[in-house]
Length: 520
Length: 89
Image 1 (cartoon, chains in turn brown, orange):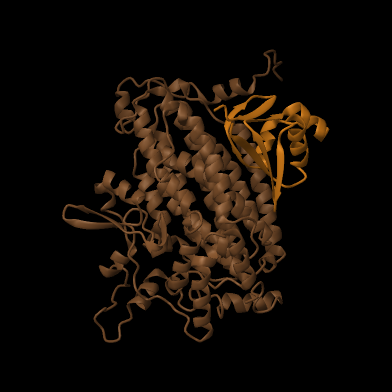
Image 2: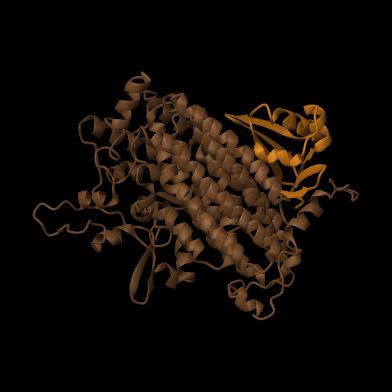
Protein backbone atom coordinates (compact mmCIF):
# COMPACT_ATOMS: atom_id res chain seq x y z
CA UNK A 1 0.00 0.00 0.00
CA UNK A 2 1.33 3.40 -0.92
CA UNK A 3 1.85 5.83 1.93
CA UNK A 4 0.15 9.13 1.37
CA UNK A 5 2.68 11.95 1.50
CA UNK A 6 1.43 14.82 3.59
CA UNK A 7 4.58 16.78 4.30
CA UNK A 8 5.62 19.54 1.92
CA UNK A 9 8.43 18.52 -0.40
CA UNK A 10 11.80 19.58 0.99
CA UNK A 11 13.72 22.37 -0.69
CA UNK A 12 17.21 21.84 -2.06
CA UNK A 13 18.98 23.18 1.03
CA UNK A 14 16.91 21.10 3.44
CA UNK A 15 17.30 18.00 1.33
CA UNK A 16 21.04 18.50 1.27
CA UNK A 17 21.18 19.05 5.02
CA UNK A 18 19.26 15.81 5.60
CA UNK A 19 21.68 13.90 3.40
CA UNK A 20 24.89 15.28 4.86
CA UNK A 21 24.32 16.23 8.49
CA UNK A 22 23.81 14.15 11.56
CA UNK A 23 25.97 11.46 10.01
CA UNK A 24 28.59 12.00 12.65
CA UNK A 25 28.53 11.48 16.38
CA UNK A 26 30.59 12.34 19.44
CA UNK A 27 32.67 9.37 20.41
CA UNK A 28 32.24 7.89 23.88
CA UNK A 29 34.95 5.32 24.68
CA UNK A 30 37.70 6.94 22.59
CA UNK A 31 38.63 10.64 22.64
CA UNK A 32 37.75 12.49 19.41
CA UNK A 33 41.39 13.51 18.99
CA UNK A 34 42.39 9.88 18.72
CA UNK A 35 39.68 9.16 16.17
CA UNK A 36 40.67 12.23 14.14
CA UNK A 37 44.41 12.40 14.70
CA UNK A 38 45.38 14.61 11.74
CA UNK A 39 43.18 17.70 11.63
CA UNK A 40 44.91 19.65 14.40
CA UNK A 41 48.65 19.29 13.99
CA UNK A 42 48.94 21.86 11.19
CA UNK A 43 47.85 24.58 13.65
CA UNK A 44 44.50 25.23 11.96
CA UNK A 45 41.84 26.18 14.49
CA UNK A 46 38.24 25.13 13.84
CA UNK A 47 35.63 26.24 16.36
CA UNK A 48 32.40 25.26 14.63
CA UNK A 49 32.33 22.66 11.90
CA UNK A 50 28.62 23.38 11.31
CA UNK A 51 29.63 26.68 9.72
CA UNK A 52 30.93 24.66 6.77
CA UNK A 53 28.87 25.75 3.77
CA UNK A 54 28.44 23.20 1.02
CA UNK A 55 29.24 24.75 -2.32
CA UNK A 56 27.02 22.62 -4.57
CA UNK A 57 24.07 21.01 -2.91
CA UNK A 58 24.28 17.87 -4.96
CA UNK A 59 22.88 15.03 -2.91
CA UNK A 60 24.11 11.49 -3.45
CA UNK A 61 20.99 10.42 -5.37
CA UNK A 62 21.22 13.40 -7.73
CA UNK A 63 24.96 12.82 -8.00
CA UNK A 64 24.52 9.25 -9.26
CA UNK A 65 21.80 10.37 -11.63
CA UNK A 66 23.74 13.16 -13.32
CA UNK A 67 27.08 11.40 -13.24
CA UNK A 68 25.37 8.38 -14.82
CA UNK A 69 24.10 10.61 -17.63
CA UNK A 70 27.55 12.06 -18.18
CA UNK A 71 29.04 8.57 -18.38
CA UNK A 72 26.43 7.46 -20.93
CA UNK A 73 27.21 10.45 -23.13
CA UNK A 74 30.94 9.92 -22.84
CA UNK A 75 30.86 6.21 -23.62
CA UNK A 76 28.53 6.81 -26.57
CA UNK A 77 31.13 9.18 -28.00
CA UNK A 78 33.99 6.76 -27.28
CA UNK A 79 32.09 3.91 -29.01
CA UNK A 80 31.29 6.04 -32.03
CA UNK A 81 34.91 7.19 -32.16
CA UNK A 82 36.24 3.61 -32.09
CA UNK A 83 33.73 2.30 -34.64
CA UNK A 84 34.34 5.21 -36.96
CA UNK A 85 38.16 5.11 -36.82
CA UNK A 86 38.02 8.55 -35.22
CA UNK A 87 41.77 8.47 -34.69
CA UNK A 88 42.20 9.12 -38.42
CA UNK A 89 40.13 12.30 -38.24
CA UNK A 90 42.57 14.28 -36.12
CA UNK A 91 44.43 17.11 -37.87
CA UNK A 92 47.68 15.18 -37.97
CA UNK A 93 49.53 12.63 -35.90
CA UNK A 94 51.70 15.30 -34.26
CA UNK A 95 48.60 16.21 -32.24
CA UNK A 96 48.62 12.76 -30.61
CA UNK A 97 51.78 13.64 -28.71
CA UNK A 98 49.62 15.94 -26.58
CA UNK A 99 47.38 12.96 -25.83
CA UNK A 100 50.47 10.94 -24.88
CA UNK A 101 51.53 13.66 -22.46
CA UNK A 102 48.00 13.63 -21.07
CA UNK A 103 47.98 9.91 -20.26
CA UNK A 104 51.56 10.06 -18.99
CA UNK A 105 51.35 13.20 -16.87
CA UNK A 106 47.70 14.04 -16.07
CA UNK A 107 45.74 10.78 -15.68
CA UNK A 108 48.05 9.46 -12.93
CA UNK A 109 47.35 12.72 -11.06
CA UNK A 110 43.62 12.07 -11.26
CA UNK A 111 44.22 8.74 -9.58
CA UNK A 112 46.41 10.33 -6.92
CA UNK A 113 43.72 12.98 -6.34
CA UNK A 114 41.27 10.14 -5.72
CA UNK A 115 43.60 8.63 -3.13
CA UNK A 116 44.17 12.00 -1.51
CA UNK A 117 40.50 12.84 -1.17
CA UNK A 118 39.61 9.35 0.04
CA UNK A 119 42.25 9.90 2.73
CA UNK A 120 41.25 13.40 3.84
CA UNK A 121 37.56 12.45 3.58
CA UNK A 122 38.29 10.33 6.63
CA UNK A 123 40.32 12.92 8.51
CA UNK A 124 38.00 15.90 9.01
CA UNK A 125 35.78 15.74 12.06
CA UNK A 126 33.09 17.85 10.34
CA UNK A 127 30.56 15.76 8.40
CA UNK A 128 30.00 18.36 5.64
CA UNK A 129 33.67 18.42 4.70
CA UNK A 130 33.87 14.63 4.83
CA UNK A 131 30.94 14.20 2.43
CA UNK A 132 32.37 16.77 0.01
CA UNK A 133 35.77 15.05 0.01
CA UNK A 134 34.31 11.59 -0.46
CA UNK A 135 32.28 12.74 -3.46
CA UNK A 136 35.37 14.32 -4.94
CA UNK A 137 37.31 11.07 -4.38
CA UNK A 138 34.70 9.23 -6.46
CA UNK A 139 34.91 11.92 -9.15
CA UNK A 140 38.67 11.68 -9.40
CA UNK A 141 38.60 7.91 -9.73
CA UNK A 142 36.04 8.35 -12.51
CA UNK A 143 38.36 10.80 -14.26
CA UNK A 144 41.29 8.38 -14.15
CA UNK A 145 39.11 5.56 -15.48
CA UNK A 146 37.43 7.52 -18.26
CA UNK A 147 40.76 8.94 -19.43
CA UNK A 148 42.36 5.50 -19.53
CA UNK A 149 39.36 4.05 -21.38
CA UNK A 150 39.27 6.89 -23.89
CA UNK A 151 42.98 6.97 -24.63
CA UNK A 152 43.21 3.18 -24.91
CA UNK A 153 41.65 3.60 -28.37
CA UNK A 154 44.71 5.54 -29.48
CA UNK A 155 47.04 3.11 -27.77
CA UNK A 156 45.94 0.44 -30.28
CA UNK A 157 47.44 2.45 -33.14
CA UNK A 158 50.12 4.81 -31.84
CA UNK A 159 53.24 4.59 -29.72
CA UNK A 160 54.11 6.25 -26.43
CA UNK A 161 51.12 5.17 -24.33
CA UNK A 162 51.84 1.60 -23.27
CA UNK A 163 53.66 1.99 -19.94
CA UNK A 164 52.42 5.31 -18.63
CA UNK A 165 51.91 4.05 -15.07
CA UNK A 166 55.51 2.85 -14.76
CA UNK A 167 56.79 5.97 -16.50
CA UNK A 168 55.00 8.14 -13.97
CA UNK A 169 57.07 6.51 -11.22
CA UNK A 170 60.46 6.77 -12.93
CA UNK A 171 60.81 8.90 -16.05
CA UNK A 172 62.64 12.19 -15.67
CA UNK A 173 60.03 14.65 -16.96
CA UNK A 174 57.17 12.81 -15.23
CA UNK A 175 58.77 13.46 -11.85
CA UNK A 176 57.28 16.95 -12.30
CA UNK A 177 53.60 15.95 -11.90
CA UNK A 178 54.54 13.13 -9.52
CA UNK A 179 56.40 15.43 -7.15
CA UNK A 180 53.48 17.85 -7.09
CA UNK A 181 51.04 15.23 -5.88
CA UNK A 182 53.48 13.37 -3.64
CA UNK A 183 54.10 16.69 -1.94
CA UNK A 184 50.36 17.38 -1.53
CA UNK A 185 49.38 13.91 -0.37
CA UNK A 186 52.11 13.82 2.30
CA UNK A 187 50.96 17.16 3.74
CA UNK A 188 48.31 17.54 6.43
CA UNK A 189 44.62 17.36 5.46
CA UNK A 190 44.03 21.12 5.38
CA UNK A 191 47.15 21.76 3.36
CA UNK A 192 46.11 19.01 0.95
CA UNK A 193 42.72 20.57 0.38
CA UNK A 194 44.25 24.03 -0.15
CA UNK A 195 46.85 22.55 -2.51
CA UNK A 196 44.46 20.53 -4.62
CA UNK A 197 40.97 22.05 -4.33
CA UNK A 198 42.06 25.61 -4.24
CA UNK A 199 45.45 26.27 -5.83
CA UNK A 200 45.26 23.47 -8.38
CA UNK A 201 41.56 23.13 -9.16
CA UNK A 202 40.47 26.71 -8.74
CA UNK A 203 43.33 28.74 -10.08
CA UNK A 204 44.82 26.27 -12.50
CA UNK A 205 42.59 23.49 -13.96
CA UNK A 206 40.66 25.91 -16.12
CA UNK A 207 43.87 26.44 -18.04
CA UNK A 208 44.09 22.76 -18.87
CA UNK A 209 40.52 21.66 -19.33
CA UNK A 210 38.99 24.67 -21.03
CA UNK A 211 41.25 26.12 -23.78
CA UNK A 212 43.26 22.94 -24.30
CA UNK A 213 40.13 20.79 -24.58
CA UNK A 214 38.50 23.28 -26.90
CA UNK A 215 41.70 22.90 -28.93
CA UNK A 216 41.31 19.12 -28.90
CA UNK A 217 37.84 19.58 -30.44
CA UNK A 218 39.30 21.94 -33.03
CA UNK A 219 41.81 19.24 -33.96
CA UNK A 220 39.08 16.64 -34.50
CA UNK A 221 39.61 14.67 -31.28
CA UNK A 222 36.03 14.38 -30.06
CA UNK A 223 36.79 11.62 -27.59
CA UNK A 224 39.42 13.61 -25.69
CA UNK A 225 37.28 16.73 -25.60
CA UNK A 226 34.38 14.70 -24.23
CA UNK A 227 36.33 13.18 -21.35
CA UNK A 228 37.94 16.57 -20.75
CA UNK A 229 34.68 18.48 -20.48
CA UNK A 230 33.06 15.66 -18.54
CA UNK A 231 35.91 15.89 -16.04
CA UNK A 232 35.85 19.68 -15.92
CA UNK A 233 32.13 19.72 -15.08
CA UNK A 234 33.17 17.90 -11.91
CA UNK A 235 36.07 20.30 -11.48
CA UNK A 236 33.60 23.17 -11.32
CA UNK A 237 32.21 21.53 -8.19
CA UNK A 238 35.73 20.94 -6.91
CA UNK A 239 36.71 24.54 -7.49
CA UNK A 240 33.82 25.75 -5.42
CA UNK A 241 34.72 23.22 -2.75
CA UNK A 242 38.17 24.82 -2.72
CA UNK A 243 36.73 28.30 -2.46
CA UNK A 244 34.38 27.30 0.34
CA UNK A 245 37.13 25.45 2.19
CA UNK A 246 39.36 28.50 2.09
CA UNK A 247 36.61 30.87 3.23
CA UNK A 248 35.72 28.45 6.03
CA UNK A 249 39.33 28.31 7.26
CA UNK A 250 39.72 32.10 7.10
CA UNK A 251 36.43 32.76 8.89
CA UNK A 252 37.00 30.26 11.71
CA UNK A 253 40.00 31.97 13.31
CA UNK A 254 42.31 34.87 12.50
CA UNK A 255 45.26 32.63 13.44
CA UNK A 256 44.48 30.53 10.35
CA UNK A 257 45.13 33.43 7.97
CA UNK A 258 48.95 33.39 7.92
CA UNK A 259 49.02 29.58 7.69
CA UNK A 260 46.65 29.64 4.73
CA UNK A 261 48.59 32.48 3.07
CA UNK A 262 51.76 30.39 3.33
CA UNK A 263 50.02 27.47 1.63
CA UNK A 264 48.65 29.74 -1.10
CA UNK A 265 52.15 31.09 -1.77
CA UNK A 266 53.57 27.59 -1.95
CA UNK A 267 50.86 25.89 -3.96
CA UNK A 268 50.28 28.67 -6.43
CA UNK A 269 53.94 28.44 -7.40
CA UNK A 270 54.01 24.64 -7.47
CA UNK A 271 50.85 24.48 -9.62
CA UNK A 272 52.08 27.20 -11.92
CA UNK A 273 55.39 25.41 -12.54
CA UNK A 274 53.53 22.16 -13.27
CA UNK A 275 51.44 23.94 -15.89
CA UNK A 276 54.54 24.62 -17.98
CA UNK A 277 53.65 21.34 -19.69
CA UNK A 278 50.21 22.68 -20.59
CA UNK A 279 51.64 25.89 -22.03
CA UNK A 280 53.76 23.79 -24.35
CA UNK A 281 50.80 21.57 -25.30
CA UNK A 282 48.76 24.63 -26.28
CA UNK A 283 51.40 26.56 -28.19
CA UNK A 284 53.34 23.75 -29.87
CA UNK A 285 51.41 20.48 -29.80
CA UNK A 286 47.99 21.53 -31.15
CA UNK A 287 48.31 21.80 -34.93
CA UNK A 288 45.20 24.01 -34.97
CA UNK A 289 45.18 26.45 -32.10
CA UNK A 290 42.34 28.11 -30.23
CA UNK A 291 44.35 30.49 -28.08
CA UNK A 292 47.91 30.91 -26.92
CA UNK A 293 49.20 30.06 -23.46
CA UNK A 294 49.66 33.76 -22.91
CA UNK A 295 46.02 34.55 -23.75
CA UNK A 296 44.78 31.67 -21.60
CA UNK A 297 46.97 32.89 -18.73
CA UNK A 298 45.49 36.38 -19.03
CA UNK A 299 41.91 35.09 -18.93
CA UNK A 300 42.11 32.27 -16.41
CA UNK A 301 44.97 33.33 -14.15
CA UNK A 302 45.17 37.13 -14.29
CA UNK A 303 41.44 37.88 -14.60
CA UNK A 304 39.85 34.87 -12.91
CA UNK A 305 42.52 34.15 -10.31
CA UNK A 306 42.87 37.90 -9.78
CA UNK A 307 39.12 38.16 -9.07
CA UNK A 308 39.43 35.42 -6.51
CA UNK A 309 42.27 37.10 -4.65
CA UNK A 310 40.42 40.41 -4.75
CA UNK A 311 37.50 38.58 -3.14
CA UNK A 312 39.74 37.10 -0.44
CA UNK A 313 41.44 40.42 0.33
CA UNK A 314 38.77 41.14 2.96
CA UNK A 315 40.30 38.37 5.08
CA UNK A 316 43.77 39.85 4.78
CA UNK A 317 44.85 37.50 1.99
CA UNK A 318 47.16 38.99 -0.65
CA UNK A 319 48.20 37.74 -4.09
CA UNK A 320 50.49 34.72 -3.77
CA UNK A 321 54.25 35.15 -3.90
CA UNK A 322 55.57 34.78 -7.43
CA UNK A 323 52.35 36.03 -9.03
CA UNK A 324 54.08 38.98 -10.68
CA UNK A 325 56.89 36.79 -11.98
CA UNK A 326 54.42 34.24 -13.37
CA UNK A 327 52.67 37.03 -15.25
CA UNK A 328 56.00 38.14 -16.74
CA UNK A 329 56.88 34.58 -17.76
CA UNK A 330 53.73 34.13 -19.87
CA UNK A 331 55.79 35.32 -22.86
CA UNK A 332 58.43 32.63 -22.39
CA UNK A 333 57.68 29.36 -20.64
CA UNK A 334 56.05 27.44 -23.50
CA UNK A 335 58.95 28.22 -25.86
CA UNK A 336 61.57 27.37 -23.25
CA UNK A 337 59.89 24.05 -22.41
CA UNK A 338 59.49 23.04 -26.05
CA UNK A 339 63.13 23.89 -26.72
CA UNK A 340 64.14 21.58 -23.87
CA UNK A 341 61.96 18.69 -25.03
CA UNK A 342 63.21 19.19 -28.60
CA UNK A 343 66.70 18.60 -27.21
CA UNK A 344 65.77 15.67 -25.00
CA UNK A 345 63.17 13.91 -27.16
CA UNK A 346 65.63 11.01 -27.57
CA UNK A 347 64.98 10.27 -23.89
CA UNK A 348 61.24 11.06 -23.80
CA UNK A 349 58.24 8.91 -24.69
CA UNK A 350 56.84 11.32 -27.26
CA UNK A 351 57.99 13.07 -30.41
CA UNK A 352 58.92 16.69 -31.03
CA UNK A 353 59.34 18.75 -34.19
CA UNK A 354 60.13 22.20 -35.49
CA UNK A 355 56.89 24.15 -36.08
CA UNK A 356 55.96 24.82 -39.70
CA UNK A 357 56.22 28.32 -41.22
CA UNK A 358 52.51 29.06 -40.71
CA UNK A 359 52.81 27.91 -37.11
CA UNK A 360 55.82 30.15 -36.53
CA UNK A 361 53.83 33.03 -38.01
CA UNK A 362 51.07 32.32 -35.48
CA UNK A 363 53.61 32.28 -32.64
CA UNK A 364 55.06 35.61 -33.84
CA UNK A 365 51.60 37.14 -33.83
CA UNK A 366 50.71 35.79 -30.37
CA UNK A 367 54.10 36.58 -28.83
CA UNK A 368 55.16 39.88 -30.45
CA UNK A 369 57.51 40.73 -27.58
CA UNK A 370 59.43 37.47 -27.43
CA UNK A 371 59.06 34.97 -30.28
CA UNK A 372 60.86 36.61 -33.21
CA UNK A 373 63.57 38.04 -31.04
CA UNK A 374 64.37 35.06 -28.82
CA UNK A 375 62.83 31.82 -29.95
CA UNK A 376 62.36 31.85 -33.74
CA UNK A 377 66.10 32.18 -34.49
CA UNK A 378 66.82 29.18 -32.31
CA UNK A 379 64.11 27.04 -33.95
CA UNK A 380 65.30 28.07 -37.42
CA UNK A 381 68.87 27.19 -36.52
CA UNK A 382 67.83 23.75 -35.30
CA UNK A 383 65.72 23.29 -38.42
CA UNK A 384 68.66 24.11 -40.69
CA UNK A 385 70.87 21.72 -38.73
CA UNK A 386 68.32 18.95 -39.03
CA UNK A 387 67.97 19.51 -42.78
CA UNK A 388 71.75 19.23 -43.04
CA UNK A 389 71.53 15.84 -41.35
CA UNK A 390 72.56 17.04 -37.88
CA UNK A 391 69.36 16.64 -35.85
CA UNK A 392 70.64 17.29 -32.33
CA UNK A 393 69.72 15.00 -29.46
CA UNK A 394 71.04 15.94 -26.05
CA UNK A 395 72.56 12.88 -24.37
CA UNK A 396 73.57 14.50 -21.10
CA UNK A 397 71.44 14.58 -17.96
CA UNK A 398 69.78 17.88 -17.10
CA UNK A 399 70.19 19.36 -13.62
CA UNK A 400 66.76 19.51 -11.99
CA UNK A 401 65.27 22.00 -9.60
CA UNK A 402 65.00 20.22 -6.24
CA UNK A 403 61.50 21.58 -5.61
CA UNK A 404 59.55 21.37 -8.88
CA UNK A 405 61.96 18.81 -10.45
CA UNK A 406 61.83 20.64 -13.80
CA UNK A 407 65.18 20.85 -15.60
CA UNK A 408 66.84 24.23 -15.02
CA UNK A 409 65.44 25.74 -18.20
CA UNK A 410 63.75 28.91 -17.00
CA UNK A 411 65.32 32.34 -17.33
CA UNK A 412 65.67 35.27 -14.96
CA UNK A 413 62.37 37.17 -14.53
CA UNK A 414 63.88 40.33 -16.04
CA UNK A 415 66.42 38.81 -18.41
CA UNK A 416 65.14 36.12 -20.78
CA UNK A 417 68.66 35.53 -22.11
CA UNK A 418 70.03 34.32 -18.79
CA UNK A 419 69.17 31.00 -17.13
CA UNK A 420 67.94 31.45 -13.57
CA UNK A 421 69.95 29.56 -10.94
CA UNK A 422 69.33 29.68 -7.20
CA UNK A 423 70.76 27.49 -4.49
CA UNK A 424 70.56 26.80 -0.77
CA UNK A 425 72.87 24.98 1.58
CA UNK A 426 71.32 22.56 4.03
CA UNK A 427 73.31 20.32 6.39
CA UNK A 428 76.42 20.74 4.29
CA UNK A 429 74.79 19.88 0.96
CA UNK A 430 73.97 22.18 -1.95
CA UNK A 431 70.45 22.16 -3.40
CA UNK A 432 69.57 23.84 -6.69
CA UNK A 433 66.44 25.70 -7.78
CA UNK A 434 64.94 27.16 -10.94
CA UNK A 435 63.46 30.24 -9.27
CA UNK A 436 63.06 32.28 -6.12
CA UNK A 437 59.65 30.60 -5.68
CA UNK A 438 61.10 27.09 -5.60
CA UNK A 439 63.99 28.14 -3.34
CA UNK A 440 61.53 29.75 -0.92
CA UNK A 441 59.46 26.55 -0.76
CA UNK A 442 62.56 24.46 -0.04
CA UNK A 443 63.88 26.84 2.61
CA UNK A 444 60.57 26.58 4.51
CA UNK A 445 60.54 22.77 4.59
CA UNK A 446 64.03 21.50 3.78
CA UNK A 447 63.52 18.16 5.53
CA UNK A 448 60.72 17.39 3.09
CA UNK A 449 62.48 18.33 -0.14
CA UNK A 450 65.85 16.77 0.60
CA UNK A 451 63.91 13.54 -0.01
CA UNK A 452 62.81 14.61 -3.50
CA UNK A 453 63.08 11.92 -6.14
CA UNK A 454 65.27 13.44 -8.85
CA UNK A 455 65.47 11.01 -11.79
CA UNK A 456 68.98 12.03 -12.96
CA UNK A 457 70.26 11.38 -9.44
CA UNK A 458 68.60 7.96 -9.54
CA UNK A 459 70.40 7.27 -12.81
CA UNK A 460 73.75 8.38 -11.37
CA UNK A 461 73.15 6.15 -8.37
CA UNK A 462 72.73 3.23 -10.78
CA UNK A 463 69.14 2.57 -9.78
CA UNK A 464 67.67 2.94 -13.25
CA UNK A 465 69.24 -0.10 -14.90
CA UNK A 466 67.63 -3.52 -15.21
CA UNK A 467 68.96 -6.27 -12.92
CA UNK A 468 72.12 -7.83 -14.30
CA UNK A 469 73.15 -4.79 -16.33
CA UNK A 470 76.88 -4.08 -15.96
CA UNK A 471 77.68 -0.37 -16.29
CA UNK A 472 81.39 -1.27 -16.37
CA UNK A 473 81.07 -3.44 -19.49
CA UNK A 474 82.96 -2.26 -22.59
CA UNK A 475 80.85 -0.07 -24.87
CA UNK A 476 78.19 0.41 -22.18
CA UNK A 477 75.54 2.92 -23.33
CA UNK A 478 73.96 4.43 -20.20
CA UNK A 479 71.12 6.19 -22.03
CA UNK A 480 70.09 3.00 -23.84
CA UNK A 481 70.21 1.08 -20.55
CA UNK A 482 68.07 3.68 -18.77
CA UNK A 483 65.48 3.76 -21.57
CA UNK A 484 65.37 -0.03 -21.47
CA UNK A 485 64.71 0.11 -17.73
CA UNK A 486 61.97 2.72 -18.28
CA UNK A 487 60.26 0.53 -20.91
CA UNK A 488 60.60 3.23 -23.58
CA UNK A 489 60.83 1.55 -26.98
CA UNK A 490 63.78 3.26 -28.58
CA UNK A 491 63.07 4.30 -32.16
CA UNK A 492 59.30 4.00 -31.74
CA UNK A 493 58.36 6.11 -28.72
CA UNK A 494 61.07 8.75 -29.03
CA UNK A 495 63.11 10.91 -31.46
CA UNK A 496 61.81 13.43 -33.98
CA UNK A 497 58.25 13.16 -35.28
CA UNK A 498 59.65 13.34 -38.80
CA UNK A 499 60.45 9.80 -39.82
CA UNK A 500 58.56 8.25 -36.89
CA UNK A 501 56.35 5.18 -37.13
CA UNK A 502 53.39 7.32 -35.99
CA UNK A 503 53.93 9.71 -38.87
CA UNK A 504 54.23 6.94 -41.47
CA UNK A 505 51.25 4.96 -40.21
CA UNK A 506 48.98 7.98 -39.94
CA UNK A 507 49.94 9.10 -43.46
CA UNK A 508 49.23 5.65 -44.87
CA UNK A 509 46.00 4.98 -42.95
CA UNK A 510 44.44 8.41 -43.31
CA UNK A 511 45.58 9.12 -46.88
CA UNK A 512 46.47 12.64 -45.73
CA UNK A 513 50.09 12.44 -46.93
CA UNK A 514 53.34 12.34 -45.03
CA UNK A 515 53.46 15.94 -43.88
CA UNK A 516 49.96 17.13 -43.02
CA UNK A 517 49.82 20.58 -41.53
CA UNK A 518 53.55 21.05 -42.04
CA UNK A 519 54.34 23.71 -44.57
CA UNK A 520 58.00 24.19 -43.81
CA UNK B 1 33.93 44.55 -9.93
CA UNK B 2 35.36 41.29 -11.28
CA UNK B 3 33.98 39.11 -14.05
CA UNK B 4 32.08 35.90 -13.31
CA UNK B 5 31.62 33.25 -15.98
CA UNK B 6 29.90 30.00 -16.76
CA UNK B 7 30.75 27.71 -19.69
CA UNK B 8 28.79 24.87 -21.24
CA UNK B 9 29.39 22.31 -23.93
CA UNK B 10 28.04 23.66 -27.20
CA UNK B 11 25.10 21.36 -27.93
CA UNK B 12 21.32 21.24 -28.23
CA UNK B 13 20.83 20.58 -24.51
CA UNK B 14 22.54 23.82 -23.53
CA UNK B 15 21.11 26.20 -26.15
CA UNK B 16 17.93 26.91 -24.11
CA UNK B 17 20.00 27.40 -20.95
CA UNK B 18 22.30 29.84 -22.71
CA UNK B 19 19.32 31.72 -24.20
CA UNK B 20 17.73 31.95 -20.76
CA UNK B 21 20.93 33.31 -19.21
CA UNK B 22 21.29 35.94 -21.92
CA UNK B 23 17.64 36.99 -21.42
CA UNK B 24 17.94 37.30 -17.65
CA UNK B 25 21.36 38.97 -17.53
CA UNK B 26 21.32 41.96 -19.89
CA UNK B 27 25.03 42.78 -19.47
CA UNK B 28 26.18 39.22 -20.11
CA UNK B 29 28.51 38.59 -23.04
CA UNK B 30 28.52 35.36 -25.04
CA UNK B 31 31.85 33.98 -26.17
CA UNK B 32 32.04 30.98 -28.52
CA UNK B 33 34.98 28.61 -29.03
CA UNK B 34 35.26 25.14 -30.58
CA UNK B 35 32.89 22.82 -28.65
CA UNK B 36 32.12 25.34 -25.91
CA UNK B 37 30.16 28.48 -25.12
CA UNK B 38 31.18 30.78 -22.29
CA UNK B 39 29.11 33.58 -20.80
CA UNK B 40 30.90 36.42 -18.99
CA UNK B 41 29.21 38.99 -16.78
CA UNK B 42 30.38 41.78 -14.51
CA UNK B 43 30.00 40.88 -10.84
CA UNK B 44 26.92 38.69 -11.03
CA UNK B 45 25.19 36.12 -13.21
CA UNK B 46 21.96 34.24 -12.52
CA UNK B 47 20.45 31.15 -14.09
CA UNK B 48 16.68 31.15 -13.45
CA UNK B 49 14.75 27.89 -13.61
CA UNK B 50 11.55 29.54 -14.90
CA UNK B 51 13.26 31.19 -17.84
CA UNK B 52 15.01 27.96 -18.81
CA UNK B 53 11.63 26.19 -18.65
CA UNK B 54 10.13 28.81 -20.96
CA UNK B 55 12.95 28.34 -23.43
CA UNK B 56 12.82 24.57 -23.12
CA UNK B 57 9.04 24.07 -23.00
CA UNK B 58 9.26 21.53 -20.20
CA UNK B 59 9.99 21.36 -16.48
CA UNK B 60 13.69 21.75 -15.71
CA UNK B 61 15.69 20.89 -12.63
CA UNK B 62 18.57 23.35 -12.35
CA UNK B 63 20.92 20.55 -11.36
CA UNK B 64 20.51 19.12 -14.88
CA UNK B 65 23.08 21.78 -15.75
CA UNK B 66 25.78 19.50 -14.35
CA UNK B 67 25.51 17.20 -17.36
CA UNK B 68 26.77 19.85 -19.78
CA UNK B 69 28.51 22.33 -17.51
CA UNK B 70 32.21 22.87 -18.18
CA UNK B 71 33.31 25.48 -15.71
CA UNK B 72 32.29 28.44 -13.56
CA UNK B 73 33.85 31.10 -11.43
CA UNK B 74 32.57 33.12 -8.47
CA UNK B 75 30.77 32.43 -5.23
CA UNK B 76 27.72 30.21 -5.68
CA UNK B 77 24.26 30.67 -4.24
CA UNK B 78 21.96 27.85 -5.28
CA UNK B 79 18.36 26.92 -4.52
CA UNK B 80 15.55 25.21 -6.41
CA UNK B 81 14.70 28.30 -8.46
CA UNK B 82 17.99 29.94 -9.25
CA UNK B 83 21.71 29.44 -9.47
CA UNK B 84 23.76 32.61 -8.95
CA UNK B 85 27.45 33.35 -9.33
CA UNK B 86 28.86 36.50 -7.72
CA UNK B 87 32.02 38.39 -7.00
CA UNK B 88 30.89 40.84 -4.36
CA UNK B 89 34.32 42.34 -3.81
